[in-house]
Image 1 (cartoon, one colour):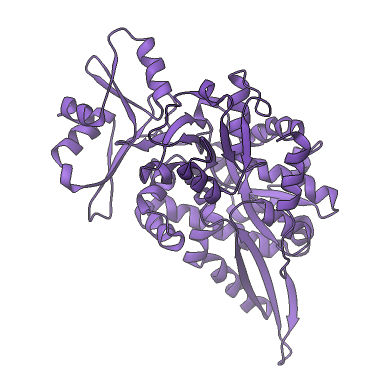
Image 2: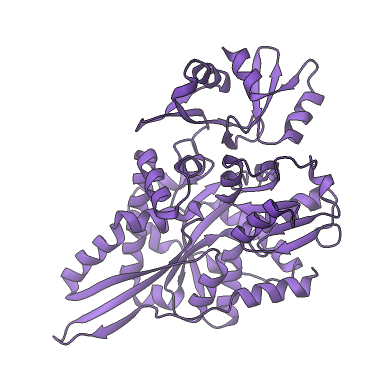
Length: 451
C-alpha cells in the first residue's frame, strides 16, 4: 500500500457517526445539566487510568457531583468506547467529544487534524509509558518459520495504519534496511481483525499495541518476533482535550485529571484488584492485563508530561509525515500541562522527575490477592518449580530490554549458572552468538536447572 492509500485509509477511519459533546441542557425545574463526553479505548489497557479503570472506580463522577453541589449544576459523564484513537479524533474535531485518550502516533494525528479543521486540541496528561518502546510488539503464529525481521520481506504484515504499533513496525523495518512500503505487504486492519487474519493465515505477522501481542501469546495463538523495546525509543499514551473545552470549562478538565491521578495511585497500590477490574470490564484475561499494568508491568503509569516523552513525540512526526499522514506538527504548541499541574498540586515537580521502577520477576499465585516479586529470573524459576500447581502466572523481564513477558512464553538461555529470559528467539540467539558456552533451552529445562 503506497503513501496515498495510507493517508486515504486514515481519512476514512476518521469519518464516524457523531454524538453529543459537552453541553448544557435546561431542566424543567430551571436547573442545568452539563454533560462531559469522554472517548476512551477499553481494550487499549495502557489508557485505563483515563478510561476503563477510571470509569469503574467512579472517581470522575464523584468529582463532578462535588462540583455540581457548589455550582448548582448537574454534571454527568458520557463514556464512549472505541477500538483505536482515530474515531476519537474524528469526534473531537467535530466538537462531539471533549476529552480522549490514545497513543503517541494517534495523538499527533489528533493535533494535526485539530489544527486543520480549526478545532485545536491539547495534550494535557499521560496515562502510561515505556521508555524503551516495549508496549508494541510484532508477533507471528506459534508454528511460524519466521525468526527475525529479515524474514518479513515479501510477507503480509497486519497493523493499524497511523497507530503506535505501525510506527514501531516502520522504524524496526527501516533499521533492518527493509522498506516498509515496498519490501512488505502492509495490511491496514483493526487489531481484532488483524488477530483473526494471523490465525487464519491471511497475515504472516501482526504488529500491534497493548494488549494484543500479550493476549495472543497468552492464548498460545502467537509468539513474539520483535520486541518494540529494541528500538529504545519511548512510547506512551496520553489524554487530549479540545482547546475550546479546556478554555471554557477548565475546572471540569482539572476534575478529570485529578480523578485520573487518583486512579493512577489506585492502580499502583492495588495492582491485582485493578487488573481484575479491567479484565472484568474488557473480557481480557486478568493475567494479560497484569502483564502490562501490574506492579512490574510493561507500562509505567504516571500522569505527568515528561520532557523525554515530548521529545519522543517530536521524533515521531517525521515518521508520520513520510507516510503522508500529517504535515508539520508543532508539538510544543500541542502540549499543555498547565491543567494537570494544577490538578496534581505542589508535588507535580517531584512526580515529573521520578524514574520508573526497576523491573523484577513476579509470580501470581493461584487464589491469591497479592503477587510475589523476585530479584532474578532464576529465583522465580526455583519458586515455580517448587510450586508448579499453585502458580496462576509468572512474569520475567527480558535480559536485554527489560520488557516483561510470560515466563513460559519466554525464550530461555543458560549462560553458565545464569538463566536469562528473552521475549524473542532472535534476541536469545544473538545473546548466545556473543557468549561462548551459552545455549538456549526450553522452559521445562530452565525449571529443572533452577530447581
